[in-house]
Length: 172
Image (tube, rainbow, N blue to C red):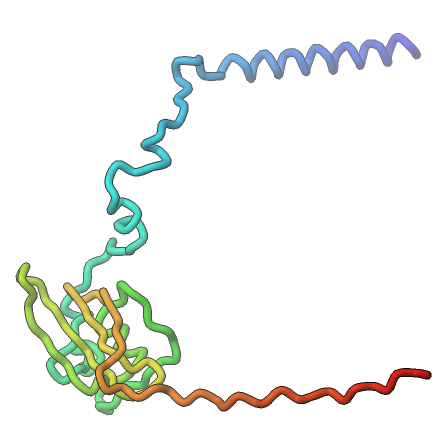
């Protein structure tokens, strides 16, 4: 009985050695190993961090643009009722013109022009609501949000005065 246990242990050891030897045969040589350099951690171009954070993989198309009245051309063609429903979602940089209009509703003022580079530049002005401001777009994407001139501050709830706690009498 002792010899069969020793035989099994021997088989396990032989199998383990075979596996380790086989795994080592596919290991790369030291010439294939590359250590990181300083340029891996610190970019050579100062704008590299900025460019990586903005998602411009998909450029805006004509369907993402608004018209002179501040309505989405694609949405107004699809909607025969005339009034668009606004969704209760936030606004972030790199959103298209139509996405912002769908989130905030129709703007009070719309300015469509071209910038010095010949690119489409749009400014939407919202004077009322929680997100009143001046929303600027370049090539159909939101690039900045500013407080609108003359925009009213949203009402903030009044502060409640702190309640004074009555002092407990000290035991005598």
